[in-house]
Image (cartoon, rainbow, N blue to C red; front, side, top):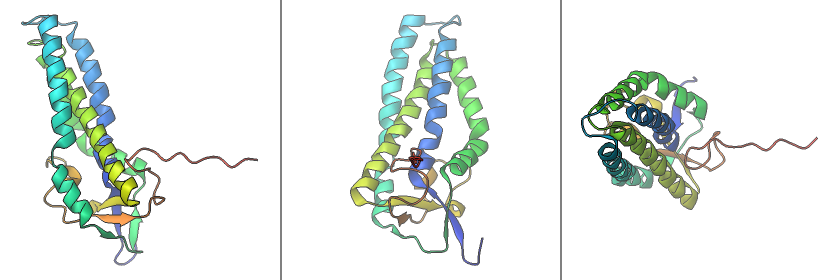
Length: 197
């Protein structure tokens, strides 16, 4: 990096990064949970899991929205010294920092199935869907304001901190135009059309 330069990552990408992992780990854990002997039985476990899925989805999708909105409203324009972090790099960094969290969450979800089959896995999946939903909400803000939201990577909290890009350690966001970087509003991968030969 040059003098005064610093890297920034997309806010929506960081929110979306764990969504797929939590969803698939939750689905696998729920599937395993249906096969193990339990205290409550499958019917109660699945019903409890469905309720936990909906609660986890709703809570995860809405928690800290005011904080995200406040940071977005006060965001400043990114300068020329900013280095935009690729989507794949942001996802890879997040995965490496949280791989043990994901493993522990999966094992806990499977272990909970001995009490209530599939419930732990469905809870995990609900958190994943909630994060995906929140990323879409951020994407709608970005589209409405024709700006992409970025956060300095050196301002992000450690992997054990809760809050991610909305953590209290984050003092503000930066914005760029909607064509900057390699991710669309909401954090999905930008599809680049191939030029016709």
